[in-house]
Length: 483
Ligand SMILES: NC(=O)c1ccc[n+]([C@@H]2O[C@H](COP(=O)([O-])OP(=O)(O)OC[C@H]3O[C@@H](n4cnc5c(N)ncnc54)[C@H](O)[C@@H]3O)[C@@H](O)[C@H]2O)c1
Ligand SMILES: C[N+](C)(C)CC=O
Image (tube, rainbow, N blue to C red; front, top):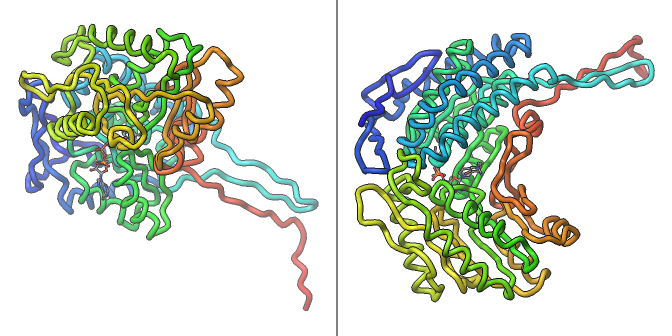
Protein backbone atom coordinates (compact mmCIF):
# COMPACT_ATOMS: atom_id res chain seq x y z
CA UNK A 1 0.00 0.00 0.00
CA UNK A 2 1.48 3.38 -1.02
CA UNK A 3 0.27 6.98 -0.76
CA UNK A 4 3.44 8.70 -1.91
CA UNK A 5 2.71 12.34 -2.89
CA UNK A 6 4.25 13.82 -6.04
CA UNK A 7 6.65 15.76 -3.81
CA UNK A 8 6.92 16.83 -0.18
CA UNK A 9 5.92 20.49 -0.51
CA UNK A 10 3.56 22.59 -2.58
CA UNK A 11 4.98 26.04 -3.24
CA UNK A 12 4.10 28.74 -5.75
CA UNK A 13 1.42 26.68 -7.47
CA UNK A 14 3.44 23.46 -7.94
CA UNK A 15 4.90 20.50 -6.10
CA UNK A 16 8.43 21.06 -4.83
CA UNK A 17 11.04 18.62 -3.55
CA UNK A 18 14.24 19.15 -1.63
CA UNK A 19 15.50 15.73 -0.68
CA UNK A 20 18.24 17.22 1.50
CA UNK A 21 15.60 17.81 4.21
CA UNK A 22 15.31 15.15 6.94
CA UNK A 23 13.07 12.21 6.00
CA UNK A 24 9.67 11.95 7.66
CA UNK A 25 8.13 8.50 7.24
CA UNK A 26 4.35 8.36 6.87
CA UNK A 27 2.90 5.32 8.61
CA UNK A 28 -0.57 3.83 8.11
CA UNK A 29 -1.76 3.43 11.71
CA UNK A 30 -4.01 0.49 10.81
CA UNK A 31 -1.03 -1.78 10.08
CA UNK A 32 2.12 0.12 11.02
CA UNK A 33 3.29 -0.02 7.36
CA UNK A 34 5.20 2.87 5.82
CA UNK A 35 3.10 4.29 2.99
CA UNK A 36 5.12 7.37 2.02
CA UNK A 37 8.17 9.45 2.88
CA UNK A 38 8.30 13.21 2.84
CA UNK A 39 11.19 15.53 3.54
CA UNK A 40 11.26 18.24 6.15
CA UNK A 41 11.44 21.75 4.68
CA UNK A 42 14.99 23.07 4.45
CA UNK A 43 15.71 26.78 4.93
CA UNK A 44 15.57 27.09 1.11
CA UNK A 45 12.05 25.59 0.98
CA UNK A 46 10.87 27.80 3.88
CA UNK A 47 12.23 30.84 2.06
CA UNK A 48 10.62 29.81 -1.24
CA UNK A 49 7.22 29.39 0.42
CA UNK A 50 7.34 32.70 2.28
CA UNK A 51 8.62 34.58 -0.77
CA UNK A 52 5.87 33.07 -2.94
CA UNK A 53 3.17 33.95 -0.40
CA UNK A 54 4.50 37.48 -0.03
CA UNK A 55 4.67 38.08 -3.80
CA UNK A 56 1.20 36.67 -4.40
CA UNK A 57 -0.57 38.60 -1.65
CA UNK A 58 -0.94 42.02 -3.26
CA UNK A 59 -2.33 40.81 -6.60
CA UNK A 60 -4.60 38.30 -4.80
CA UNK A 61 -6.02 41.04 -2.56
CA UNK A 62 -6.53 43.26 -5.61
CA UNK A 63 -8.88 40.77 -7.29
CA UNK A 64 -12.59 41.45 -7.18
CA UNK A 65 -13.77 39.75 -3.97
CA UNK A 66 -16.37 37.71 -5.85
CA UNK A 67 -13.58 36.31 -8.01
CA UNK A 68 -11.73 35.09 -4.89
CA UNK A 69 -15.02 33.68 -3.64
CA UNK A 70 -15.67 31.90 -6.94
CA UNK A 71 -12.27 30.17 -6.73
CA UNK A 72 -13.00 28.95 -3.20
CA UNK A 73 -16.44 27.68 -4.21
CA UNK A 74 -14.94 25.91 -7.22
CA UNK A 75 -12.46 24.23 -4.86
CA UNK A 76 -15.40 23.15 -2.68
CA UNK A 77 -17.07 21.54 -5.71
CA UNK A 78 -13.88 19.68 -6.65
CA UNK A 79 -13.52 18.41 -3.09
CA UNK A 80 -17.11 17.14 -3.03
CA UNK A 81 -16.62 15.41 -6.39
CA UNK A 82 -13.43 13.74 -5.07
CA UNK A 83 -14.78 13.02 -1.57
CA UNK A 84 -14.12 9.27 -1.62
CA UNK A 85 -10.51 9.60 -2.79
CA UNK A 86 -9.80 12.37 -0.25
CA UNK A 87 -11.51 10.45 2.55
CA UNK A 88 -9.43 7.36 1.76
CA UNK A 89 -6.27 9.48 1.97
CA UNK A 90 -7.40 10.97 5.31
CA UNK A 91 -7.97 7.43 6.59
CA UNK A 92 -4.49 6.33 5.48
CA UNK A 93 -2.90 9.47 6.97
CA UNK A 94 -4.67 9.36 10.35
CA UNK A 95 -6.14 5.85 10.79
CA UNK A 96 -9.62 7.32 11.31
CA UNK A 97 -12.34 4.97 10.04
CA UNK A 98 -13.56 5.55 6.51
CA UNK A 99 -17.14 5.58 7.86
CA UNK A 100 -16.13 8.85 9.61
CA UNK A 101 -13.84 10.42 7.05
CA UNK A 102 -16.45 10.08 4.30
CA UNK A 103 -18.74 12.45 6.23
CA UNK A 104 -16.52 14.54 8.50
CA UNK A 105 -13.31 15.64 6.84
CA UNK A 106 -13.24 16.55 3.13
CA UNK A 107 -16.92 17.46 3.46
CA UNK A 108 -16.11 19.85 6.30
CA UNK A 109 -13.34 21.39 4.18
CA UNK A 110 -15.80 21.84 1.31
CA UNK A 111 -18.31 23.46 3.67
CA UNK A 112 -15.68 25.98 4.80
CA UNK A 113 -14.62 26.86 1.25
CA UNK A 114 -18.23 27.19 0.15
CA UNK A 115 -19.28 29.26 3.17
CA UNK A 116 -16.36 31.70 3.05
CA UNK A 117 -16.47 31.82 -0.74
CA UNK A 118 -20.09 32.92 -0.37
CA UNK A 119 -19.13 35.71 2.04
CA UNK A 120 -16.64 37.24 -0.40
CA UNK A 121 -18.94 39.99 -1.61
CA UNK A 122 -19.95 41.03 1.89
CA UNK A 123 -16.53 42.12 3.20
CA UNK A 124 -17.36 45.79 3.40
CA UNK A 125 -16.68 48.63 5.80
CA UNK A 126 -19.07 51.37 6.91
CA UNK A 127 -19.76 55.02 6.32
CA UNK A 128 -19.61 57.28 9.41
CA UNK A 129 -21.17 60.78 9.21
CA UNK A 130 -19.24 63.44 11.20
CA UNK A 131 -21.12 66.71 10.72
CA UNK A 132 -19.66 68.36 7.63
CA UNK A 133 -16.84 65.79 7.52
CA UNK A 134 -17.26 62.07 7.20
CA UNK A 135 -15.29 58.86 7.46
CA UNK A 136 -15.35 55.33 6.22
CA UNK A 137 -13.82 52.07 7.32
CA UNK A 138 -12.30 49.46 5.07
CA UNK A 139 -11.81 45.78 5.86
CA UNK A 140 -8.28 45.00 4.67
CA UNK A 141 -6.26 41.78 4.68
CA UNK A 142 -3.50 41.11 7.20
CA UNK A 143 -0.93 39.87 4.67
CA UNK A 144 0.92 36.56 4.78
CA UNK A 145 -0.65 34.14 7.25
CA UNK A 146 0.88 30.97 8.68
CA UNK A 147 -1.27 27.95 9.53
CA UNK A 148 0.08 25.24 11.83
CA UNK A 149 -1.94 22.04 11.96
CA UNK A 150 -2.59 19.22 14.43
CA UNK A 151 -2.64 15.60 13.28
CA UNK A 152 -6.20 14.59 14.13
CA UNK A 153 -8.11 16.47 11.37
CA UNK A 154 -5.49 17.31 8.72
CA UNK A 155 -7.87 18.21 5.88
CA UNK A 156 -10.35 20.10 8.03
CA UNK A 157 -7.73 22.06 9.95
CA UNK A 158 -6.04 23.19 6.72
CA UNK A 159 -9.33 24.26 5.13
CA UNK A 160 -10.72 25.98 8.24
CA UNK A 161 -7.64 28.22 8.16
CA UNK A 162 -7.20 28.61 4.40
CA UNK A 163 -10.81 29.47 3.51
CA UNK A 164 -11.30 32.59 5.69
CA UNK A 165 -7.68 33.68 5.19
CA UNK A 166 -7.88 33.53 1.42
CA UNK A 167 -11.30 35.09 1.04
CA UNK A 168 -10.09 38.15 2.95
CA UNK A 169 -7.21 38.61 0.49
CA UNK A 170 -4.42 37.04 2.55
CA UNK A 171 -2.08 34.32 1.36
CA UNK A 172 -0.98 31.37 3.47
CA UNK A 173 1.92 29.09 4.21
CA UNK A 174 0.48 26.01 5.91
CA UNK A 175 2.54 23.49 7.82
CA UNK A 176 0.67 20.28 8.57
CA UNK A 177 1.59 18.11 11.53
CA UNK A 178 4.67 16.03 10.85
CA UNK A 179 2.51 12.99 11.75
CA UNK A 180 -0.04 13.56 8.97
CA UNK A 181 1.60 15.42 6.08
CA UNK A 182 -0.43 14.15 3.11
CA UNK A 183 -3.90 15.72 3.10
CA UNK A 184 -2.99 19.44 3.03
CA UNK A 185 -1.03 18.84 -0.19
CA UNK A 186 -4.28 17.77 -1.84
CA UNK A 187 -5.98 20.97 -0.70
CA UNK A 188 -3.17 23.00 -2.31
CA UNK A 189 -3.45 21.00 -5.53
CA UNK A 190 -7.23 21.51 -5.63
CA UNK A 191 -7.01 25.26 -4.97
CA UNK A 192 -4.66 25.55 -7.95
CA UNK A 193 -7.05 23.53 -10.10
CA UNK A 194 -9.87 25.83 -8.97
CA UNK A 195 -7.93 28.88 -10.18
CA UNK A 196 -5.96 30.14 -7.15
CA UNK A 197 -2.86 31.91 -8.48
CA UNK A 198 0.60 30.52 -7.60
CA UNK A 199 1.74 31.39 -4.09
CA UNK A 200 -1.72 31.97 -2.63
CA UNK A 201 -1.75 28.69 -0.65
CA UNK A 202 1.53 26.89 0.04
CA UNK A 203 2.21 23.75 2.06
CA UNK A 204 5.55 22.87 3.57
CA UNK A 205 6.45 19.92 5.79
CA UNK A 206 8.27 19.63 9.06
CA UNK A 207 8.06 19.56 12.82
CA UNK A 208 8.20 22.34 15.41
CA UNK A 209 11.48 23.80 14.17
CA UNK A 210 9.95 24.55 10.77
CA UNK A 211 6.86 25.95 12.50
CA UNK A 212 9.04 28.18 14.66
CA UNK A 213 10.95 29.51 11.63
CA UNK A 214 7.63 30.48 10.03
CA UNK A 215 6.30 32.15 13.19
CA UNK A 216 9.49 34.18 13.59
CA UNK A 217 9.69 35.45 10.00
CA UNK A 218 9.09 39.19 9.76
CA UNK A 219 6.99 38.80 6.59
CA UNK A 220 4.33 36.88 8.51
CA UNK A 221 1.43 38.96 9.83
CA UNK A 222 -0.68 36.25 11.46
CA UNK A 223 -0.28 32.78 12.94
CA UNK A 224 -3.14 30.37 13.39
CA UNK A 225 -2.29 27.25 15.37
CA UNK A 226 -4.34 24.16 16.00
CA UNK A 227 -2.43 22.15 18.55
CA UNK A 228 -1.77 21.48 22.19
CA UNK A 229 -1.99 24.06 24.95
CA UNK A 230 1.73 23.64 25.55
CA UNK A 231 2.64 24.46 21.93
CA UNK A 232 0.10 27.28 22.01
CA UNK A 233 2.01 29.07 24.75
CA UNK A 234 5.28 28.88 22.79
CA UNK A 235 3.76 30.00 19.49
CA UNK A 236 1.80 32.79 21.16
CA UNK A 237 4.99 34.07 22.82
CA UNK A 238 6.88 33.98 19.51
CA UNK A 239 4.10 35.81 17.67
CA UNK A 240 3.68 38.39 20.44
CA UNK A 241 7.37 39.31 20.23
CA UNK A 242 6.62 40.76 16.78
CA UNK A 243 3.06 41.91 17.54
CA UNK A 244 1.51 39.39 15.14
CA UNK A 245 -2.16 38.46 15.04
CA UNK A 246 -2.95 35.00 16.42
CA UNK A 247 -5.70 32.43 16.50
CA UNK A 248 -5.09 29.59 18.96
CA UNK A 249 -7.21 26.45 18.75
CA UNK A 250 -5.90 24.34 21.60
CA UNK A 251 -6.82 21.37 23.73
CA UNK A 252 -9.61 20.76 26.22
CA UNK A 253 -10.86 18.62 29.10
CA UNK A 254 -14.51 19.30 28.58
CA UNK A 255 -17.46 18.44 30.83
CA UNK A 256 -20.53 16.57 29.62
CA UNK A 257 -23.19 16.95 32.32
CA UNK A 258 -26.11 14.52 32.45
CA UNK A 259 -29.01 15.31 34.80
CA UNK A 260 -31.34 12.60 36.06
CA UNK A 261 -34.24 13.87 33.93
CA UNK A 262 -32.27 13.61 30.66
CA UNK A 263 -33.24 11.40 27.76
CA UNK A 264 -30.78 8.73 28.87
CA UNK A 265 -30.36 6.95 25.53
CA UNK A 266 -29.60 10.25 23.86
CA UNK A 267 -27.12 11.10 26.63
CA UNK A 268 -25.44 7.70 26.19
CA UNK A 269 -25.12 8.34 22.43
CA UNK A 270 -23.61 11.74 23.16
CA UNK A 271 -21.12 10.26 25.63
CA UNK A 272 -20.10 7.69 23.00
CA UNK A 273 -19.66 10.32 20.27
CA UNK A 274 -17.95 12.68 22.69
CA UNK A 275 -15.31 10.12 23.66
CA UNK A 276 -14.86 7.51 20.95
CA UNK A 277 -15.34 9.35 17.62
CA UNK A 278 -11.95 9.52 15.89
CA UNK A 279 -10.77 7.04 18.54
CA UNK A 280 -10.99 9.81 21.12
CA UNK A 281 -8.65 12.15 19.25
CA UNK A 282 -10.95 15.19 19.17
CA UNK A 283 -10.08 18.46 20.90
CA UNK A 284 -13.62 19.22 22.04
CA UNK A 285 -14.36 15.78 23.47
CA UNK A 286 -16.46 15.58 26.63
CA UNK A 287 -14.07 13.37 28.53
CA UNK A 288 -15.40 14.24 31.97
CA UNK A 289 -18.88 12.75 31.96
CA UNK A 290 -20.71 13.99 35.09
CA UNK A 291 -23.79 11.83 35.77
CA UNK A 292 -26.34 12.68 38.47
CA UNK A 293 -26.07 9.99 41.10
CA UNK A 294 -29.62 8.59 40.88
CA UNK A 295 -29.19 7.57 37.21
CA UNK A 296 -25.54 6.57 37.33
CA UNK A 297 -26.10 2.80 37.48
CA UNK A 298 -28.63 2.84 34.65
CA UNK A 299 -26.43 5.16 32.55
CA UNK A 300 -23.39 2.91 32.99
CA UNK A 301 -25.32 -0.24 32.21
CA UNK A 302 -26.73 1.18 28.95
CA UNK A 303 -23.36 2.73 28.02
CA UNK A 304 -21.32 -0.44 28.51
CA UNK A 305 -23.88 -2.54 26.60
CA UNK A 306 -23.67 -0.15 23.63
CA UNK A 307 -19.87 0.24 23.61
CA UNK A 308 -19.45 -3.55 23.77
CA UNK A 309 -21.10 -3.68 20.35
CA UNK A 310 -18.59 -1.30 18.70
CA UNK A 311 -16.58 -2.77 15.85
CA UNK A 312 -12.89 -2.08 16.25
CA UNK A 313 -10.77 -2.86 13.23
CA UNK A 314 -9.28 -1.90 9.90
CA UNK A 315 -10.26 1.73 9.34
CA UNK A 316 -10.54 1.09 5.58
CA UNK A 317 -13.52 -1.20 6.24
CA UNK A 318 -16.81 0.72 6.18
CA UNK A 319 -18.18 -1.45 9.00
CA UNK A 320 -15.46 -0.27 11.41
CA UNK A 321 -16.55 2.10 14.21
CA UNK A 322 -13.19 2.58 15.93
CA UNK A 323 -9.83 2.58 14.19
CA UNK A 324 -6.32 2.76 15.62
CA UNK A 325 -4.67 5.71 17.32
CA UNK A 326 -2.89 7.96 14.84
CA UNK A 327 0.61 7.33 16.17
CA UNK A 328 2.51 4.82 18.26
CA UNK A 329 3.39 7.70 20.57
CA UNK A 330 -0.28 8.61 21.12
CA UNK A 331 -1.07 4.93 21.77
CA UNK A 332 1.66 4.79 24.42
CA UNK A 333 0.37 8.01 26.04
CA UNK A 334 -3.19 6.65 26.11
CA UNK A 335 -2.11 3.30 27.60
CA UNK A 336 -0.09 5.06 30.28
CA UNK A 337 -3.17 7.11 31.29
CA UNK A 338 -5.23 3.91 31.48
CA UNK A 339 -2.65 2.48 33.87
CA UNK A 340 -2.74 5.70 35.93
CA UNK A 341 -6.53 5.48 36.10
CA UNK A 342 -6.33 1.95 37.50
CA UNK A 343 -3.50 2.81 39.89
CA UNK A 344 -5.34 5.85 41.29
CA UNK A 345 -8.47 3.80 42.06
CA UNK A 346 -10.87 4.51 39.19
CA UNK A 347 -13.15 1.53 38.43
CA UNK A 348 -12.50 0.10 34.96
CA UNK A 349 -15.91 -0.88 33.57
CA UNK A 350 -14.99 -1.46 29.95
CA UNK A 351 -11.90 -1.92 27.76
CA UNK A 352 -8.50 -0.88 28.98
CA UNK A 353 -6.33 -3.13 26.81
CA UNK A 354 -4.14 -2.67 23.77
CA UNK A 355 -5.31 -4.96 20.95
CA UNK A 356 -3.02 -7.82 20.01
CA UNK A 357 -2.79 -7.07 16.29
CA UNK A 358 -0.57 -4.97 14.00
CA UNK A 359 -1.28 -1.24 14.15
CA UNK A 360 -1.93 1.05 17.10
CA UNK A 361 -5.22 -0.18 18.53
CA UNK A 362 -6.57 0.23 22.05
CA UNK A 363 -10.04 -0.67 23.31
CA UNK A 364 -12.55 2.09 24.00
CA UNK A 365 -12.14 2.46 27.73
CA UNK A 366 -14.62 3.56 30.40
CA UNK A 367 -13.74 4.36 33.98
CA UNK A 368 -16.46 4.90 36.63
CA UNK A 369 -16.14 6.33 40.15
CA UNK A 370 -13.60 8.84 38.86
CA UNK A 371 -12.88 11.71 41.23
CA UNK A 372 -11.82 15.26 40.31
CA UNK A 373 -8.25 14.93 41.53
CA UNK A 374 -7.42 11.80 39.52
CA UNK A 375 -4.96 12.34 36.68
CA UNK A 376 -7.41 10.96 34.09
CA UNK A 377 -9.94 13.62 35.15
CA UNK A 378 -7.42 16.45 34.90
CA UNK A 379 -5.23 15.85 31.82
CA UNK A 380 -6.25 15.90 28.18
CA UNK A 381 -5.55 12.29 27.18
CA UNK A 382 -6.48 12.53 23.48
CA UNK A 383 -7.42 8.88 23.32
CA UNK A 384 -10.59 6.78 23.79
CA UNK A 385 -10.73 7.02 27.58
CA UNK A 386 -13.98 8.17 29.21
CA UNK A 387 -14.14 9.21 32.85
CA UNK A 388 -17.56 8.98 34.51
CA UNK A 389 -17.94 11.12 37.65
CA UNK A 390 -20.96 11.27 39.99
CA UNK A 391 -22.64 14.46 41.17
CA UNK A 392 -25.62 15.45 43.31
CA UNK A 393 -26.52 19.11 42.80
CA UNK A 394 -26.48 21.70 40.03
CA UNK A 395 -24.23 24.15 41.90
CA UNK A 396 -21.79 21.40 42.73
CA UNK A 397 -21.49 20.16 39.13
CA UNK A 398 -21.01 23.67 37.73
CA UNK A 399 -18.17 24.36 40.15
CA UNK A 400 -16.50 21.02 39.43
CA UNK A 401 -16.97 21.34 35.66
CA UNK A 402 -15.24 24.73 35.72
CA UNK A 403 -12.36 23.63 37.95
CA UNK A 404 -9.89 23.35 35.08
CA UNK A 405 -7.50 25.71 33.32
CA UNK A 406 -9.03 24.70 29.99
CA UNK A 407 -12.31 25.89 28.46
CA UNK A 408 -12.89 24.56 24.99
CA UNK A 409 -16.33 22.93 25.14
CA UNK A 410 -19.06 21.50 27.32
CA UNK A 411 -22.60 20.18 27.25
CA UNK A 412 -25.65 19.62 29.39
CA UNK A 413 -28.33 16.95 28.98
CA UNK A 414 -31.67 17.62 30.68
CA UNK A 415 -35.34 17.92 29.75
CA UNK A 416 -35.62 21.07 31.92
CA UNK A 417 -34.78 23.79 29.41
CA UNK A 418 -34.64 26.56 31.99
CA UNK A 419 -32.00 24.62 33.87
CA UNK A 420 -30.27 23.74 30.59
CA UNK A 421 -29.72 27.41 29.75
CA UNK A 422 -28.85 28.35 33.35
CA UNK A 423 -26.18 25.65 33.56
CA UNK A 424 -24.77 26.18 30.07
CA UNK A 425 -24.43 29.92 30.71
CA UNK A 426 -22.37 29.12 33.81
CA UNK A 427 -20.02 26.72 32.03
CA UNK A 428 -16.69 28.36 31.22
CA UNK A 429 -16.14 27.25 27.63
CA UNK A 430 -16.14 28.68 24.13
CA UNK A 431 -18.52 26.19 22.50
CA UNK A 432 -21.33 24.50 24.41
CA UNK A 433 -24.22 22.25 23.50
CA UNK A 434 -27.63 21.60 25.01
CA UNK A 435 -28.80 18.00 24.45
CA UNK A 436 -26.19 17.55 21.71
CA UNK A 437 -22.43 17.08 21.44
CA UNK A 438 -19.53 17.87 19.11
CA UNK A 439 -21.48 19.29 16.20
CA UNK A 440 -19.41 22.14 14.73
CA UNK A 441 -21.04 23.43 11.54
CA UNK A 442 -19.20 26.16 9.67
CA UNK A 443 -21.98 28.67 10.38
CA UNK A 444 -21.01 28.73 14.09
CA UNK A 445 -17.93 30.22 15.74
CA UNK A 446 -15.66 27.54 17.19
CA UNK A 447 -12.88 28.06 19.73
CA UNK A 448 -11.94 28.07 23.37
CA UNK A 449 -11.48 30.29 26.38
CA UNK A 450 -8.99 30.12 29.27
CA UNK A 451 -6.08 27.82 28.33
CA UNK A 452 -7.96 26.40 25.34
CA UNK A 453 -7.21 29.28 23.07
CA UNK A 454 -7.87 32.64 21.59
CA UNK A 455 -10.04 33.75 18.70
CA UNK A 456 -12.58 31.81 16.72
CA UNK A 457 -12.64 29.74 13.57
CA UNK A 458 -15.66 29.49 11.26
CA UNK A 459 -18.66 31.82 10.94
CA UNK A 460 -18.35 35.56 10.32
CA UNK A 461 -16.10 35.69 13.40
CA UNK A 462 -13.29 34.19 11.32
CA UNK A 463 -13.49 37.16 8.96
CA UNK A 464 -12.58 39.38 11.92
CA UNK A 465 -9.67 37.05 12.61
CA UNK A 466 -8.19 37.34 9.10
CA UNK A 467 -8.77 41.02 8.35
CA UNK A 468 -8.41 44.37 10.05
CA UNK A 469 -10.22 47.65 9.90
CA UNK A 470 -8.62 50.69 8.35
CA UNK A 471 -10.25 54.04 9.15
CA UNK A 472 -10.29 56.88 6.62
CA UNK A 473 -11.26 60.37 7.89
CA UNK A 474 -12.38 62.70 5.10
CA UNK A 475 -12.03 66.45 5.75
CA UNK A 476 -14.48 68.47 3.63
CA UNK A 477 -13.41 72.01 4.62
CA UNK A 478 -10.01 73.79 4.86
CA UNK A 479 -7.98 73.04 8.01
CA UNK A 480 -7.83 75.86 10.59
CA UNK A 481 -4.92 76.33 13.00
CA UNK A 482 -4.69 78.52 16.13
CA UNK A 483 -1.68 80.41 14.86
N1 LIG B 1 -9.19 23.56 19.42
C1 LIG B 1 -9.14 22.94 18.27
O1 LIG B 1 -9.80 23.31 17.29
C2 LIG B 1 -8.25 21.73 18.11
C3 LIG B 1 -8.47 20.88 17.01
C4 LIG B 1 -7.64 19.77 16.87
C5 LIG B 1 -6.64 19.49 17.80
N2 LIG B 1 -6.46 20.32 18.85
C6 LIG B 1 -5.44 20.01 19.86
O2 LIG B 1 -4.22 19.60 19.23
C7 LIG B 1 -3.50 18.73 20.09
C8 LIG B 1 -3.05 17.53 19.32
O3 LIG B 1 -2.34 17.91 18.19
P1 LIG B 1 -0.74 17.86 18.09
O4 LIG B 1 -0.21 16.80 19.01
O5 LIG B 1 -0.39 17.80 16.66
O6 LIG B 1 -0.33 19.27 18.69
P2 LIG B 1 1.11 19.92 18.81
O7 LIG B 1 0.93 21.10 19.67
O8 LIG B 1 2.14 18.92 19.16
O9 LIG B 1 1.46 20.39 17.30
C9 LIG B 1 0.62 21.25 16.57
C10 LIG B 1 1.40 21.87 15.43
O10 LIG B 1 2.36 22.79 15.95
C11 LIG B 1 3.65 22.50 15.45
N3 LIG B 1 4.61 22.93 16.46
C12 LIG B 1 5.02 22.27 17.56
N4 LIG B 1 5.88 23.03 18.27
C13 LIG B 1 5.98 24.22 17.63
C14 LIG B 1 6.70 25.43 17.87
N5 LIG B 1 7.47 25.58 18.95
N6 LIG B 1 6.57 26.45 17.00
C15 LIG B 1 5.76 26.33 15.92
N7 LIG B 1 5.09 25.19 15.62
C16 LIG B 1 5.17 24.15 16.47
C17 LIG B 1 3.62 21.02 15.19
O11 LIG B 1 4.63 20.63 14.29
C18 LIG B 1 2.22 20.86 14.62
O12 LIG B 1 2.16 21.22 13.27
C19 LIG B 1 -4.46 18.38 21.21
O13 LIG B 1 -4.14 19.11 22.37
C20 LIG B 1 -5.82 18.83 20.68
O14 LIG B 1 -6.76 19.13 21.67
C21 LIG B 1 -7.23 21.44 19.01
C1 LIG C 1 -12.78 21.09 15.53
N1 LIG C 1 -13.24 19.70 15.72
C2 LIG C 1 -13.99 19.62 16.96
C3 LIG C 1 -14.15 19.35 14.64
C4 LIG C 1 -12.13 18.77 15.66
C5 LIG C 1 -11.15 18.98 16.72
O1 LIG C 1 -10.36 18.17 17.11
